[in-house]
Length: 307
Image 1 (cartoon, rainbow, N blue to C red):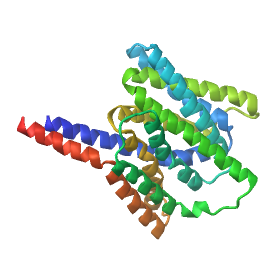
Image 2 (cartoon, rainbow, N blue to C red):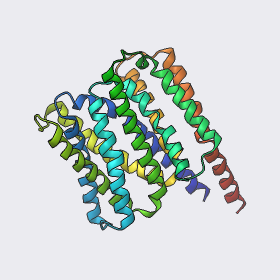
Image 3 (cartoon, rainbow, N blue to C red):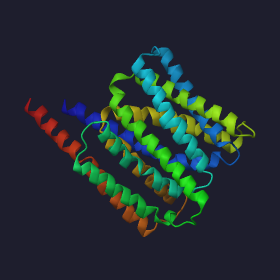
Image 4 (cartoon, rainbow, N blue to C red):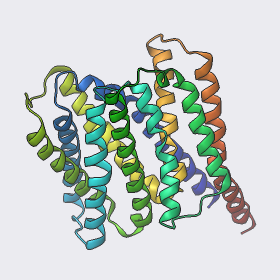
């Protein structure tokens, strides 16, 4: 029993870190992909490709269309994929990635608020404190992104981004509430296709231009569809069923930090004192977010040994 628990713990940590690594690269690939493609159309194709891949997986396992799975998938497809990603792909053309990272880090805070309103799993004071400290770490790291010229358009873009992240936070809290009653593969397939279809329709209504992908935009699309959606969505859904929602959403703090160190190691980019201090805040915050879980793990291990 103890060995199995340790294997499960290590496996889940590897999945979490993998999700953070993928998340740390998605902003860059989105920026690259938008150099010669339409925002709504790019997001639509990303999710449709990922949804079709999951749909193919349902061939081996029957597609489940019960009320709980379909309802949750539709809501998630609208609130997590269609609205937030459509908005973020669009404002990503105008706002720097550093500022978007700061705004994205607000998601765990909104997640905890919605989790409380929906009467989800109890959140400890340590977890709340960990989220706040980690958020401070992001603010320290990307403090330079907070100094920008303020005008009506910038405020509008930021407002759209915040509303999008609030929608994503609500969808995350809702999914945690319903994860036990949905078929995971069917849910992922339906929600991605719903989001993709809505974004494709939005593209035909609001966008004009070439909808073909080639060169760097095609490579970006395939990366985002396979790794940024198929792999990341599978990991997120799996961990949502296993972990407390605060721990799952903590990837919002880790992903942008990882992108900094990837740039340092592979691209020769320099790190500032703010990067190191902010990373320290995030590390302490993650320890607090995981504090209760660690105690429970030790207790379970002790009980297993006594048995």
